[in-house]
Length: 93
Image 1 (cartoon, rainbow, N blue to C red):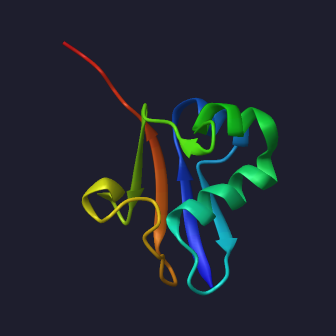
Image 2 (cartoon, one colour; image 1 turned 90 degrees about the horizontal axis):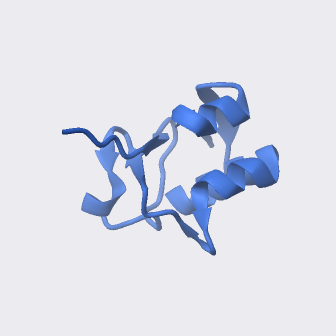
């Protein structure tokens, strides 16, 4: 099943691309999509995203432009042609 992964900020610089088209297993979750990206792009990307075994709290994870925290978390299933994105928190004053 096809899904799209978008990266921004430091992660995009490590991966070298903003948009990555992936093939994932039917029934995959947002967490599994992120893990697949990290397997392909290695320890530097993993260091930017993961805090131990979890996605770092300083990141916003989106599924189809909606924060996954409002949808039930990173274990929500993805569907064909969904888009998963990871954004750094932006702070300002």
